[in-house]
Length: 98
Image (cartoon, rainbow, N blue to C red; front, top):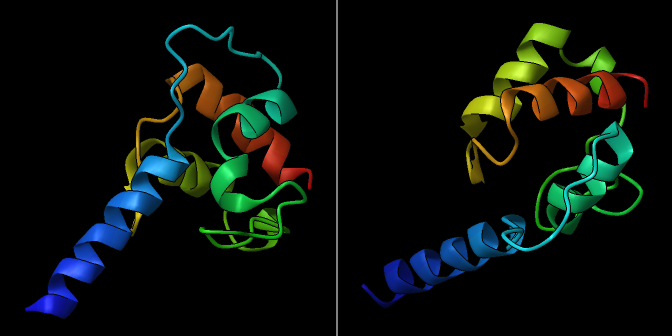
């Protein structure tokens, strides 16, 4: 039972760390800026991964449609809805170029 609570606590920390408290901050509009604003804390400054997996060479792993769905819906520990639909499209295109 103790392990379950530890796993739950760590999961909440990861989710809280990956989300951003952006209520008062001006959101960027370019792919790199949006990544830095919303994704960097979990996926790393150089896309190398941190709390979340690396996001390098996404074009060799996913189609544009698949990556957009992943950003919108989330997967595993990554919550969906961190970006608006338009922001997700912008980040998807940027990630596919990396």
